[in-house]
Length: 227
Image 1 (tube, rainbow, N blue to C red):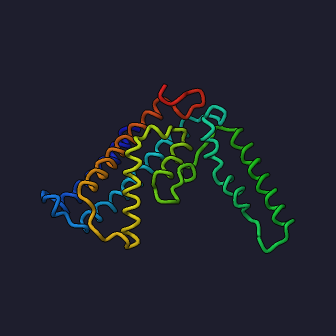
Image 2: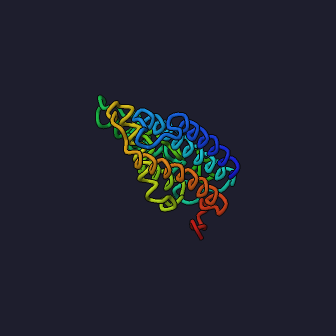
């Protein structure tokens, strides 16, 4: 696992370093252009999200390979396995607002039975997680999305430095502003560099945390993270 994550991280950091050297080189900070820094931030966000998603997928694979029953796993992982059923319950999937109340109530009952049926199925065999559901990133990766994914994988959120959460939020917001055309002015080079370095450190730390979580089996119910 560690080698797989290291390989993924290495090419991402190399690409970011190459882009930075191309656009900024050895020039002094006061000469860095807004366009160059925007380009680097957009690429950095892409690699942040890509590496995070891949790291979680690798961890989910490790959990599945352990072939444990739901009763042996942290409850968050059972919740992750039932993600689509929870969505159906929340949205009352299949209900038609144009029909009468009885139709909507019947659909709600059907979704509740479907949820119960899936629960019985997953409790009867070793639990298998679907990474796309367990670590869904349907929204831009920021502080809240990252914390939710960590929580649903039974990884304590405080394993990530709070300053790195802030850096991720900065890069996400900057990327969104650039995409929407609302961020054309120049970033402070000091701010740009500080968050760039924190985001790269975050990826290194995430690799360490994921590796530790798999090695110490934080996903098992009787094991507490960090013990």
